[in-house]
Image 1 (cartoon, rainbow, N blue to C red):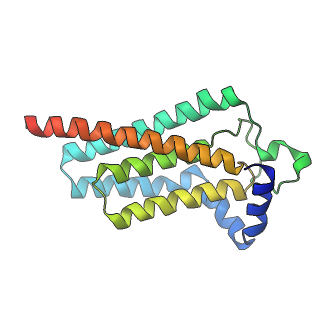
Image 2 (cartoon, rainbow, N blue to C red):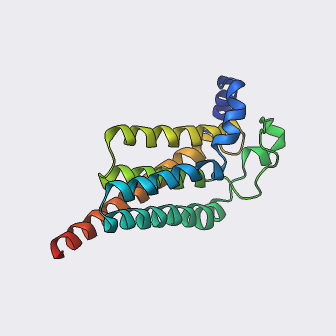
Image 3 (cartoon, one colour):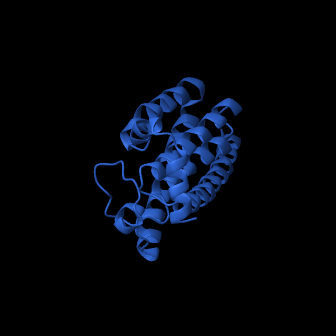
Length: 182
């Protein structure tokens, strides 16, 4: 799942998706979504549940980022496709990140959030499908712009799934204990 796969993904993806990929992979693009989710939670849930869901969301994404960016990337020290000019990947971003590639922090963090939100059972099935499509668009964009190999994405998705699942289990454990006491 290295160079050949990435070449296939980049050639398979229509050029019309390139500009959209640049927007989708940008961290600030998703801030309005996070705000809407926060507002939604406070409108639809008890205050304590909304606060707990937001806190666990921040912790899941934060742990995902720490593990992927600060532990695993330096441990594996795998260069990004855009750091290997001889491979001839198309780079759509204005600069190649200097950090390592494996695993993808975007994939880890967003999948951790999606799996936690789905596992929390406070969102509908339609919203769960939206979260998974959201993650797919982000990780596909990471490959299209030339900053990640498919294996980086798969590893990030697996790591994020594990973290999101563990946080959803912890959330239910504490939510049930707290609910019994009130």
